[in-house]
Image (tube, rainbow, N blue to C red):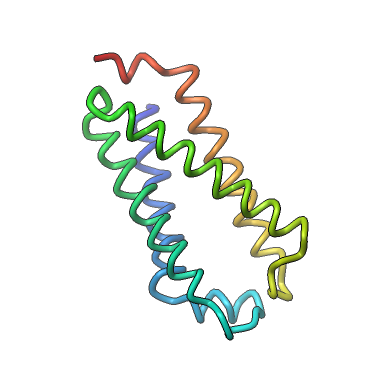
Length: 128
């Protein structure tokens, strides 16, 4: 069950990451954000797709060999989430429709907490 949830998060991350990576203008349009500097969206999309999608698939495939990778994924997810929260708190987004930004933040919080939960509660899937 836990390993299958990693696949689910991985696929969700791929979808979210690809929107940012391949269609940052679309995201800017739906959030009514300024399009003058959206290169950061492509960067974050690549990061989400690479780290969360590919990384979690590797952990799913062979958790016993990928504890360190899972730890890096979890820490990266936490740091990205904290960054989103600070940016929202300090109103750094140019988006006018912040409900979509808030959904992104809530999703990131959920994923981060869930990854921490797996590290603590289901550490045995990583036994070598």
